Structures are given as C-alpha cells and as structure tokens.
Length: 530
Ligand code: CFM
Ligand code: HCA
View 1 (cartoon, rainbow, N blue to C red):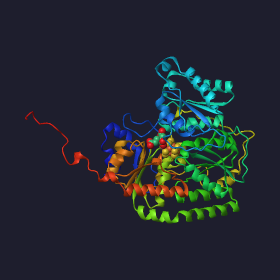
View 2 (view 1 turned 60 degrees about the horizontal axis):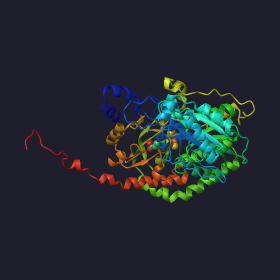
View 3 (view 1 turned 120 degrees about the horizontal axis):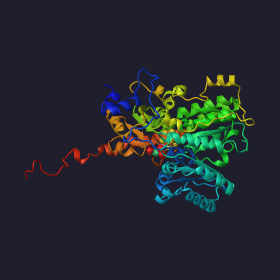
View 4 (view 1 turned 90 degrees about the vertical axis):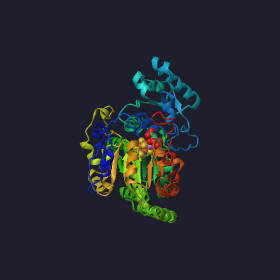
C-alpha cells in the first residue's frame, strides 16, 4: 500500500468514494495524471477552504487602495477580511488609501427581516461625507443574497447621486464552491467597469501590468524594485497596492504579466480578446523562477538594450545575495517539505524551495481547478457543473477602437514556442514519483500525510498551522508569512530561506512531551470499587 492508499483507507466508504479522486500519488513522472478539483467539499470535513466573498472582497478587490470597499452584511465577514491577509499598500502623495479601514453595514436581525438597502445607502452617504472616495465597491455576503437586496441598483443610484464610480458585487459566500467563484465575479466587475476607461498612456518604451500580485508582505514592491531597475514602467498592479486610478489605463500597457493565474486568468483572457494585450505567465517566487521570468519578458520585447540590461540586473542582484544563499543552501539541502495553500502558491513555492535544495513531497491546493494541476491545455476537457454555471461568463468582443495587438498571429505562434504566452503548466508534471498531490485538503488528511511522509517542514495557513506545529513538525504560513516577508524576488528568497531554516532548527514543540504520553490523565475508579 502506498501512502495515498493508506491515508484514504481510514475513511468510511462514502467519504472514500468522494475523496479518492482528489488525491493522487505521482507515478511515471513527468506524469499527466488526472485529478478531480473545483467541486463541492464534503460537509463537516474541516476543509481549509474559504468562501466566494473571501475570494472577491478579501482577495481581488479589497487590496485596491483608493476604493472604499463596503462589506454589506453582518460584521464578522468584514472583520475576517480586515488586514489578516497582509496585502500592503502605501499612500500616494495626495491620494486615498483605505486599506487600514474596515467598512461594513453591520447588518442586524431587523435589517435581515425588513431589508438592508436603506442601511447600505446610509453607509454610502456617511462614507461620502467623511472620505469623499472616487470609487465605492459593495461586496455582498450570504444573507444579502438570501433576502434579495439589490446592490447593483444601489450602486447605480450612488453613481447618479454623487457622480463617482460605484460597483456592486454579488459575491455571496455560498456562490460557487470556494474562494474561486469570488475571483471570477471580481474579475468580471473590474473588466466591465474599470479597465479601459482611462486614457493616460505610459511614457516608457516598455510597459507592463502585473496581474495576480497582491503585495502580501511587500512581495509586489520587491518585484517592482527589480522591474524598475531594468527600465519597465508598471501601469497598474492587480491588485496589491493597486488603484482604481491606475487600473483605468491597464489596456494601454504593452504586456500583461500573470503571477497568480488562478485568481486573475479571467481578466488576462478578456483583455487579450478585447484589447489584444498579450499575457505572459511569470513566477517571481524563487531565484531561478524570477530569472527565467525576466528573460522571458526580454524575449517578448526583443530589444537588445533591454536584454542586456536584464542580464546586468540579474547578475548584480545575484551577487548581492550570493553569500546568504550559499549559507542557507548548506542548512536546507536535502530537507523535504509539504506545501498546502489556496491556489498558485503551492506550485510557485516549489521553485523557491528547490533553489535551496528542498524537495516538495506533498502539495495541495484548497480551491484550484484542474488546469492548475494538469496544465492549461486540459481546460476544454473540463466539464461544467451547476456550481460553475452559477458564475457569469462575460461575452467579450474586440473593442472597435482600442483593440491593438502588438504581434501578428504567426509571430505569436513563434513566441509561444519559446515563452509561456497565454499558458501555464500544471503542478503535477513537475513533481516526482511517490510525491502526493491533494485537492481541497482537510485537517485529518494533513495530519495523516505528515505521519506517513515525515516532511521536515510543512508550509500552510492559519487554520492548520498550530496543530501541525504542536504535533512536532515546524510550520510557516504560506499565506501571510507570519508577519515576515517579502518572499518574492531576489531579496525575498533570502528572507524565506532564513525563516524556513529558523523554523527547522528551532523546532521547540518537538521537545515537548504532552502529559498524556507519560501519565494517565484519567481520574476515577473502575467497576465501582473504591
Ligand atoms: Fe492566488 Fe493569492 Fe493563491 Fe489566491 Fe488566497 Fe493569498 Fe493563497 Mo491565501 S490570490 S490563489 S485566494 S496566490 S489569499 S495572495 S495566500 S489562498 S495560494
Ligand atoms: C482567504 C484568505 C487567506 C486565508 C489564510 C489562511 C489569506 O482565503 O480568505 O488560511 O491562513 O491568505 O489570508 O487565504
């Protein structure tokens, strides 16, 4: 029995039937094994997944700093998405930055009974009075959909009354099966109402947008630092430290870089159709991966001066971190890791771990789709179920005035052979024989896999970090970085290696023996004798 079978063996036949297709153990690598993903979680199983509202508000639209995002719902939902994700944002001179705030209508029982639109309108008028934002976003939570408040009508009335941009998102938590539905709903809103409405052209010779970079722990700033050194102009970032003000002009950039494809591939595809903007898959997590991405970008622009500058910056950045990288390699080489995160990180971080000689023997996603595991080419074979049909798919046509592709179709074909243009590979094909890949992982499976496969470190999130750590395996949060970071780019790689080495070499919990292992904790008598 391999580890996968031993783990699944613990389940009742009903749960086994569901879970068996979500777990694979790699055979004949590089393997094209199929996995089941993006389907409903087994009720009560203690999944790590979040909801549609978390994906829309918490992940995609929340980080836009000059947008005042109101959570229409009970206070817990707003509170949950208030700062915990560590998407950093800096105030522009004279600009607005609402990231430190938490705006909510704080729906109470009478509002649920009698309707919450009035309360929402009152919240908007207070927001206008105090902050005067250029853009308000309204994000719906579960009860809003159930009672039928029309947030889109409120958004229209707000635009008429105050002459600002106001966008409603019907991202009720229960829509779809995870955060992923919320990503799609948010992408649709940005595409419909913001992208393409500005006219500020970039000044530099080569301009880009970064899609799917949320500036967690300052990752986006580290990427920007390197990209600016090379000479790129960044028009806008989707959406970490990003803004409504700059996103309006996104269609005027030369190229879209796609960092987290799971959360933003919809915008990338829609912009390609509407404006002819190409998208290139990049990964700035990992030293080797960052270098590869910078070189792919240079190939796309095919400008000798830019290529030369790219190489200069790479050499300079590598020299600056050389000693520390060598030191941490000596500490980490040969260690084994497990990585469980929501979407693309469980793939991206394998590259960074590999830089330091660490193999990822277990990897799982909370809510990825089959293409994230198996590669984008499987998309046409993915069957749509009722849950995915629930999410609107926009019909996009080329814009009669703004559609301006940079290359001809045959030039694109040639480029595609060389660089990941409108494509991303799946995680499965990069993993070796015997390694385990798991979809919509849960706490029981996490514990079982750790026992069976004994990784030296297990990288995961707040929901399971402490059970892992107290069980004696060091753990670092892959979502929030436990107050550390950045982990992206060259300098970030060193921060990551330091944190991982510290966790492995000071694994205090492994030295603690719980009392129930050495003495009986039962007090009382057996059989009624005293
Ligand atoms: Fe993309 Fe993200 Fe991720 Fe994600 Fe997330 Fe996140 Fe994540 Mo937490 S956008 S899919 S919905 S890389 S919030 S910044 S860390 S689960 S792996
Ligand atoms: C979310 C946000 C989250 C949660 C993190 C975690 C994040 O899914 O709603 O479980 O540790 O990155 O903040 O993914």
